[in-house]
Image 1 (cartoon, rainbow, N blue to C red):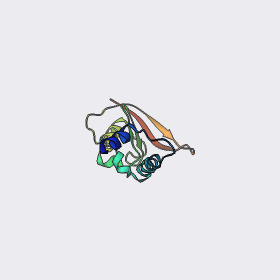
Image 2 (image 1 turned 90 degrees about the horizontal axis):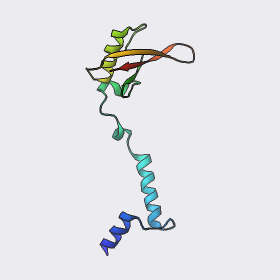
Image 3 (image 1 turned 45 degrees about the vertical axis):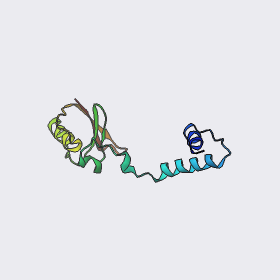
Image 4 (image 1 turned 135 degrees about the vertical axis):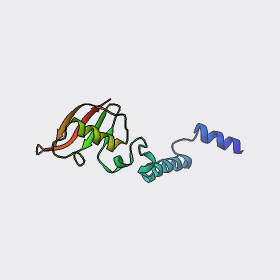
Length: 113
């Protein structure tokens, strides 16, 4: 008896109009809406990156202007990227300022290697 119920659950042989299907849907919705965001946090980023607007991809880093100053050079950006990501082996290849609707620099897109 227990094996048959287990087999039905694993292979999901219940139809759409059964109460078991409804229970599964409720469990899925609970998981989607009640799961804490911290379960899916990127652990590769440094501690400082969790509190700033930073996206780290394979070879690009998007860094806000808070830590960089008014007109950062390549050395300033390299230091800022290392501080924000927590990774020491990064070198800046190129960077581009990203501007908001008013034309102010809001972030820098930095190419790293």
